[in-house]
Figure 1 (tube, rainbow, N blue to C red):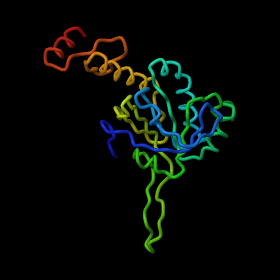
Figure 2 (figure 1 turned 180 degrees about the horizontal axis):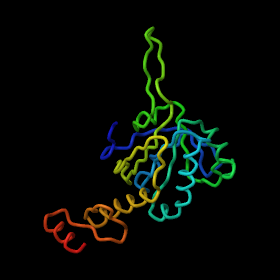
Figure 3 (figure 1 turned 30 degrees about the vertical axis):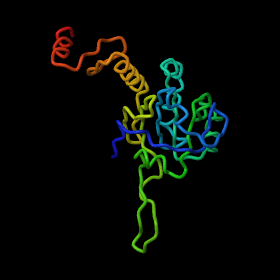
Length: 210
């Protein structure tokens, strides 16, 4: 799998649904550069079982994330029309009505390929015909992108494994802490706890006060 941490987040321009009901063209993460952090996450497909729990969980925490100047953006290989229909479907009927952050359409599979989360790949048959091997869907990839458009964290889960939104928030807090104070965050660090200076003396001081 490709590691994007420390690199510019791959650019794209595509259709998306915003505000839960509006299909737009030319949606791009570039609009957030210099303004917001981005949690950009992929999920396998609309109208499935684990996926709505994740999308709704992100929406439930949207106020906390916005207070941290974080934009949440979801993506799958479904069309914008599929996203729109799912967004209009009540949650008690398997939908995600009430989700307001943007959902990106990746029907071409190019975005999933560029972020290296696509479950399948293009190959060729014995007679030279192009075929697709595997699932034309994305794994559960999540990318934390800073205000300069640089990927600072990534994690990819297999399709049956739902992610922790709380962990995503913790990582936002850790990134913002180290940007603000110039200190690093030890294992299991949480907002409000001490960081440590990246020196032998700093580590010794941290361990002595645990």
